[in-house]
Amino acid sequence: VWKDADTTLFCASDAKAHETEVHNVWATHACVPTDPNPQEIHLENVTENFNMWKNNMVEQMQEDVISLWDQSLQPCVKLTGGSVIKQACPKISFDPIPIHYCTPAGYVILKCNDKNFNGTGPCKNVSSVQCTHGIKPVVSTQLLLNGSLAEEEIIIRSENLTNNAKTIIVHLNKSVEINCTRPSNGGSGSGGDIRKAYCEINGTKWNKVLKQVTEKLKEHFNNKTIIFQPPSGGDLEITMHHFNCRGEFFYCNTTQLFNNTCIGNETMKGCNGTITLPCKIKQIINMWQGTGQAMYAPPIDGKINCVSNITGILLTRDGGANNTSNETFRPGGGNIKDNWRSELYKYKVVQIE
Image 1: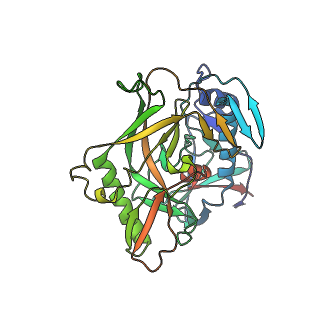
Image 2: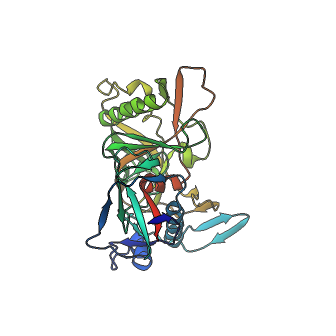
Image 3: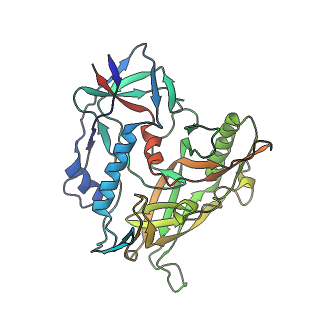
């Protein structure tokens, strides 16, 4: 017998102690090694309710990633609530590694194995595990990177789809590669802007995936026409696809990704080529931890490159369209807890009685 409970989880990882990369450094101190043969027990005839939007595991992961970032990514200048803190800001090696979350004795994690589970409500295929799968703590907006994929269909997750203030997490079933680069000479002949970068995506693949996303959204919004638009405003962290590559803060303009003419016409001229998104590396950023602004040193020399898999999309829906035949969606994000929810949706902690 068990009952829903919150407890302090511990983390496990395959961090390498000799590695200077900051996620390895953090996990070497903060986590235990992973269990080489994890036990998963399938529970017969059990139906259990899950709610990814009210899950204490998310809060704990958020705290962990904040502590990891606060230790590792030291800004040169920190502006918080009127005070200015200056400090040393060495360049670091930065590449997220998977972190597993585990329960202490007396508690267990229940895992929902329904392949099309949307994150809330009853789940009929339940197993118990001691630890979650390995989750890379990737902080990003608009696009979710290097996560796990949905096993069958694309899944639309939201705390309440009819409430347009709630973020929609789209869980893809096929990943699309995004290849981001800051060239080593700062671009040819431009006099070298060290902050100029770009991301490349295969247009055919992306527009095919987006077509499937529109079909899925249609099912949830009684067959209205689905339109994508760029974000309507706000901080750059939300109007751009914001992520960290090798310790540098990238901001990429995703307007070309959400191009309605190409959705479903992925073979059309102008839609089938490589999509190149313009990006900038910024030194002054709004911290996602919610503690003000930070200023970092100029980017490192040489080529800076990250190849990631897009495994999800964060969307917001425009309100006030009840009487029209359209629903408008814009890429969003910014509440990093949603990034963790997109991986922890299938778990909950229970106490064994």
